[in-house]
Length: 235
Image (cartoon, rainbow, N blue to C red; front, side):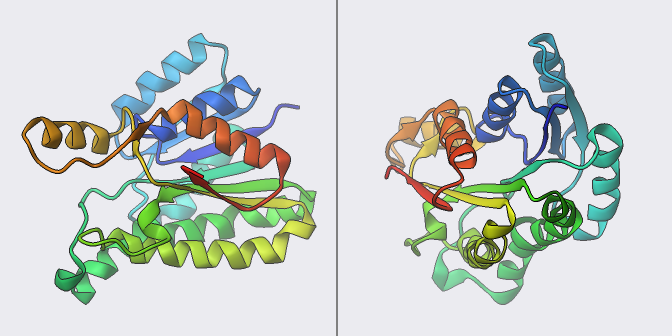
């Protein structure tokens, strides 16, 4: 029986690359993001490559909608063997001096609460089977506070703290918890396009970039080695 993965946050950068990598590895894939048209286009591409793929539109910033979303995923591919969670906030970075409580709270549903709810949906079956994987990829501001790059960072740090605890609890029960932290601009992503425009206009240079397929391979290797729970790029 083939395995399956739900990719939450299937954007044009790393999310798509993860879907392609796991599809190439024989996984059936559920593609989850807000916009239906890009999902259906990617589903068509993957299907033409022999991957069983399903477009499942959903707003991950709406935590109350998670049970219905999980039900839809189960209807398409059953209980997923792995989940990958890395949606991108629609709003950008905020300077720490300007970060008010209500702005900080606005990041939490997408980056933390909905992730918690999805883990609660899918982890029990993984533990019952004695295998599974919960994967994420976030930016370097998750690890270290950076100037003018707050907002999403505190919410992502909360996610990291939770995943570290989760790893300590479930690793010996067969479930791998993997976290990849990226200190480079991911090519083909929406942020990559914005960074290139800013650089061309003489604005901030956001530094080196990285191919999303390379990062997807890192996640695949982390999952299949079931070794260390965290990795950084660059190392």
